[in-house]
Image (cartoon, rainbow, N blue to C red):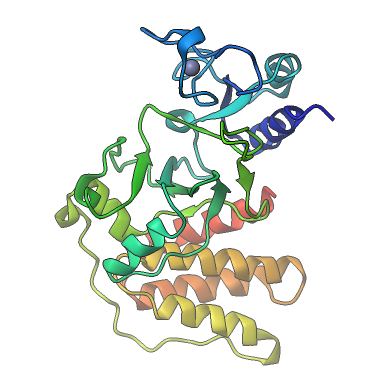
Length: 293
Ligand SMILES: [Zn+2]
């Protein structure tokens, strides 16, 4: 197998999931195949990173185009961050940790857990893929995380080198868990990146008794409901999304009723202060992410 068929297969996997991709330089070619103003392919010292096309305009979700781009000489795959949309119109946000543990350390320092999301190992650290609500204006700036995060943010007109690509060090960018989709970005992270926490004040908590799902089969569901109930401010949506996605997996296996899952999750979300509309959006998004797999 030619080493770069990995990038092609990975690009096909990505476009199947509606990630827009384009070709980038692969260190196996003699000269850098990247383009860009002032870039000298023969003297390039940052191999494996540069886009072969104007990435912000030229990218695809078409498998035939992927075959054309990745069927010949070695190429890395670039994911066009600015033009990827989630199941409910969300925007892609990639947290690029320069070292293992960077984003976890930042989250912990700010008093938050870092929950599993789609992750690509990069050789020195990793890219964590997250969905951000379309109305939140994000760019490639660190915002309030400047000096508090060993890495970069990619959420504007940007690309990241995707799984299956070859790093100049010889490491291959590797998807950690192909079953794990991007999760909703936690509110604390969006607040930190946009620096406008005042616009994202939580809605009042509904103080009313909560119906816990009943019955023997619902033990797992009860645990997931508790995960939602234990949310702290700033992580309610991401925990809800995570718990709902897990609960719907159980529903798909016939262990619980999908409608019961949706009701229990929305109920729990309302209990911790999310509006019904917001809760339903997140739960629906979690449901679709599983259905799409
Ligand atoms: Zn280059």
